[in-house]
Image (cartoon, rainbow, N blue to C red; front, top):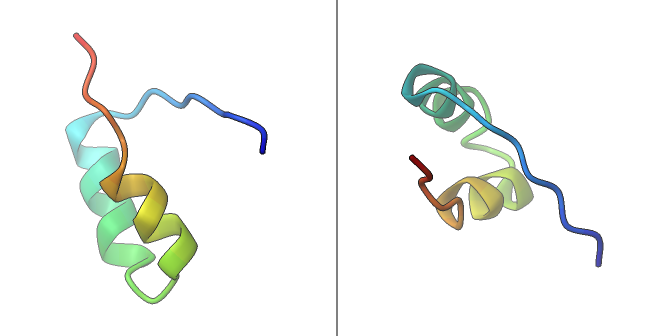
Length: 37
């Protein structure tokens, strides 16, 4: 499986969670996202 890295602000991450809560694959990716400084 390919690996993609995306940098998101906290606001973007929250918006994705809000807008894509019906999409299990997106939610899985968001929940597995790791925070970087």
